[in-house]
Structures are given as C-alpha cells and as structure tokens.
Length: 390
View (spheres, rainbow, N blue to C red):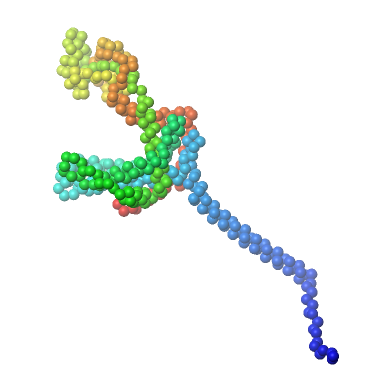
C-alpha cells in the first residue's frame, strides 16, 4: 500500500494567560459574585418587608390589644367590628327617625305636631352627637364583657353556637313579621311563614350593609346573650327583704306652718285630716300624707337626705319636724320592720340595674386590673359617612 497523503494538523495549544490576567479574572469573578449576592440579599430584604407588612396587616395588627383585663387581651379586630356594628345601628336609627320627621313635616300632618317635630329633632341631634362617643363606649363595653365572661365561667354559664343561631333566626323572622300589613280586625293576622331562603338572604344583606363577617357578627351576638344570662343570674340574687318603714308626712313652706300642723295632731286631730288640709305635697296629700312602706334610698331624691335620715331614725309612733331642701315637714313613723319585704318598685329597679351595679363594684375592686391601650390608629374609619341615606 502507498503512503496516505492526508496531513494531520497539530492540536492548537491554548494561549497561556499571564499571572496578571489570571489575577484580574479572579477579581472580576469575585465582584460578580458579590453583586449577585447583594442583589439576592436586597431581594430577600424586600421580600421580608413585604411579608412582614402582610403579617402585620392580617395577623399582628388585628391581634394587638386595645385593652387588657386581668391579663386577658381584647383584640383590635374584635374592637373594630363592634365599633362598626354600633355605628351602623346608630345610623339606621337616625335614618328611621329622620324618615319619621320628614313625614311629620309634610302636608297637613305638620299642623298640631309641633311638639313631636321638636322631639324628633332633639333626638336626631343627640344621636348624631353620640356617634363621636362610639369608639370609647365600644371599648368600655368590651371591658365589661371581659368581666362578664369571667363571672359566667365562674358560674358555669355558657352560650352555645345553637343559642346564637336560635337568637339570630328569631330576630330575623321578627323583622319579617314587622313588615306584614296590619288589618283593621281586632285579632292580629296569623304570621305568614317565611321561607328559610328569604331569611338567609336578609341575613346576608345585613352583613353586607354592616361590612363585617358572619363570624364577627355571631361573636357580637354571643357576647350579648352571655350578658343577658349573667344579668338574669344577678337579678335573681337581689335581696328582697330589708329595713322598711311605714311613714307619713305633711309638707309646709314655713316652720310656723309645720309647728301648727303638728300641734293640731298632738291635740287629737287625725294626721290624715291635717295632711289633706295643709300639706302642699301633691304626691301624698290626697292620701292623707301616707308614704306607704319605703326603704332606704327612696325618699332622698324627692324630699332630700335630711328627711330620709329623720324618717329612719324615728321609732314607731314618733313624730317630728325636719327641715329638708329648704322646706319643712312633719313626719311620723307608723311601723318599722328591720327585715320586711322591700317595695316592688325598689326590687324592680335593683333587679334591672343588677348587672350595671355589679360591674361598677367589680371595676372598683382592687383585684381587677384594667389597662386601656387604645390608640387612634386602632379606631376604624367610618364606612357609613358617605353612604346613601346617611
């Protein structure tokens, strides 16, 4: 065989870099790494800032306390929901009052309704002024609710989800019943059954108007029901007996008139006869001055503390003259019972104020710690100011 004429080329040898070029390359690569790391770090910082902002807005801020009651935090979101709810109710009431006022001021209905027009105007003005107090009153209500929750837990009182649902359904169906026309018959018409779909739609509409969630609304209802149950418990515990006296009085403008009336009684005339002729007290004169059975705290508001103190200082059968609120009285105690039944009016008042009185006493107790932490930026903006009709 002949020799091949193919010529093989020699492999190209890579050009050798100088030490200076190698050093420069390494420096350039290091700078690129630093730039990339810096960009990555900056992107991470930006991401962390965005994530923190989201967490702050959606998690941390809503959970920040507006108050702390005995170590229990009242969350910002619960506070803001209640403020919004109360504002909505206030605006609806104002709107309804304004509609009533507009009706009174139209056409022939305006004549003879000056008093009602003035009353409506005053009420609307007062309710508008109360709007500015809602942020603070809502805070105090939640503080009260925290104390009420402690009382409920101690007494084993609970409000279940079923209780809340039942209350909601009752209120919603009552709203439908109020919209049914009233006939002229003596008997009220039988309420028309309301489809559940309509009830649910009404509820969704209400939530949309208030701009709070179903969960938030149910929590507000739950607190309200718990308040009612604790009120019922405290009302049932009101003591129904105590110091009572059966007394009578004669009211006069001068001391001389009081002395003359007392001398007539001491001379043998009936107290009732003298009281009917002499007393200027329109409440008791027609009853011969008889006050009936009263307990402490009943007389001072009308007749002054001096008269009340004197009445409860007398023994049965004793009579005296006392000056109270720049007026003179002849007072006599007929009977006294250290542990008699309290007047029904007093019991009703004490039962109705049982929760309010308990809360005032509880807040004044040294073992209750309340920290009010509300800041201006935790007060929600009013979404109803520019709403139609408000």
